[in-house]
Image (cartoon, rainbow, N blue to C red; front, side, top):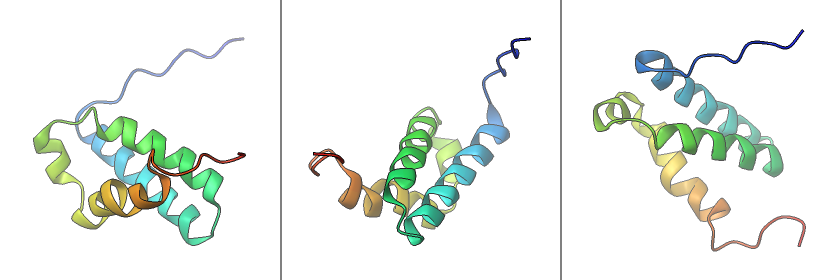
Length: 84
């Protein structure tokens, strides 16, 4: 049987999921697993970009800084893509 698609997250659940994904990406980063980190970071960033300003303010600053700036330095569009 096919699984039913989960309803999209909203409100506090969405904020919690963004925080969880950023933490997972950071743990991959600290383990030097760049491919997994890149994938998790992209998922976290996609969810982060759907948040309102008030919701973004609920995310701890350390996580926001890592997602938006530090990881951008290493995984941004200006970097050589993997496998090339």
